[in-house]
Image 1 (cartoon, rainbow, N blue to C red):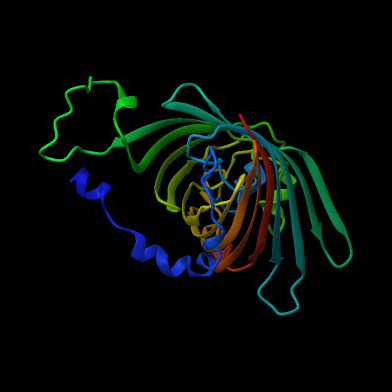
Image 2 (image 1 turned 180 degrees about the horizontal axis):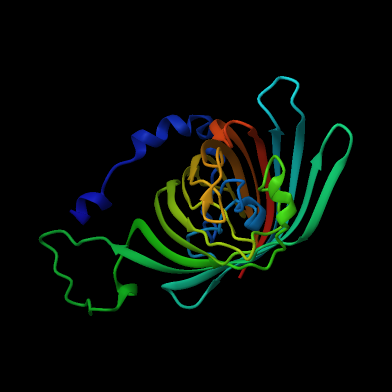
Length: 336
């Protein structure tokens, strides 16, 4: 069964998505020493976007890095059901120090340290909060898959446990468990506003469970993730709803003479439960959203420069009183 899975042909599926990238394939030269694959893990605006910037944990290949990342998020909130109900425009700016640090060839961890700078614009005033957000730390275990020898071949030299003597397959599977720490300030008075996600932090210690799968062959690849956020109650007896997130990105690695260019397309979604206060669910605080994304990464020497744009395809947030507009991200990483 594993053999069939490892040899599954995905080229037909990828062909249509990458038609726009293939016109520049003739510029390719040799593949540089490092191959970088983009992966995003999305969160909704309720508590998660204000804690880690809602844009993922990094890459899932053999690269380790430290870097800086900037995330811009744009929302519009409506306080009422009438056409003349007051509205506000939220602008979320998140500045992060982030990284992927290896422990050995199977274990590594991610850390994200965010600084939040959030604005809410009304017709007659502007609200502004800023400060350290909620730090996220996740430990990962990477499962490796190996190619099987043909039936008539016998591997006399293989010793059980010596993975480096076997040829790796195109599949990778990573399992992660982590925590979101209550390092950002939570203001109870802000929960009565149109968008209670307008917070620097959540004031809770939350658990994160994630599974990430990647497949790459030649210059094409797919990264897919599924993540569950188990959220707890803070000292104000306020609890953001638990959340399930998924994402999938298709990328094309275009190696150049001394660098590499990797454009990608993606889709993601979030489904989250209702917010609870004093152990009672608040009405119209659950929801869902499906996003599309496109972007690219450019690698030269030890540096990776990346940017992507995310846009909503369908959404139902806070009884349609909150609308996600767009999200933009840019980052600079140094490969360790």
